[in-house]
Length: 207
Image 1 (cartoon, helix red, strand yellow):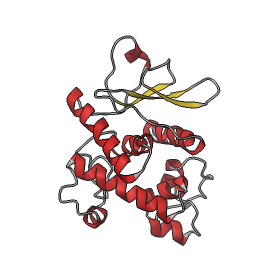
Image 2: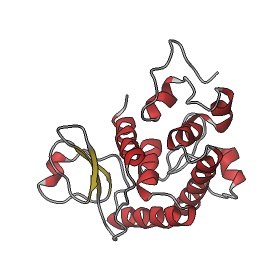
Image 3: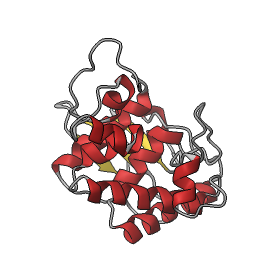
């Protein structure tokens, strides 16, 4: 399991337990922190080796302890993405921390990320999904995040606000979740993506 997948599981485990919000301040840093008892927190400061930087800058001694996911090099660009996530979260009535977690694991904050399956941009929109939300350029950060947030909101509404099922649908498709009785599909990738999912059967695939 990749470190980014661990980030998503950590952050979503917290989200499933209690609502949280990320700072909207320009240039803010958002750290995901696992304490000694494996409780999960978000903070604007790093606290020891359990801290991982979700988004933002890193200054001073804290940098030695934080393990950042890839992010735009420009501080101004990072601030733009933080603000964009806030706007998209507000427009779609989502917790911004959920969007940050999805972006972290989907693209590592790489605006021009391209998957082998053709998913593009920060929230890794597939071409058909991008068309559904009127996206003309999936590499445009604003279009991508606004559409990704709308899509995630639609999935949450479709699956009765069940975050785990909505995320499973974001990863594997809503049809796969429905095909498996509105449960997390037994695909290794999807189970790694969704917190609290049971281990996959041997040889599971997206078939």
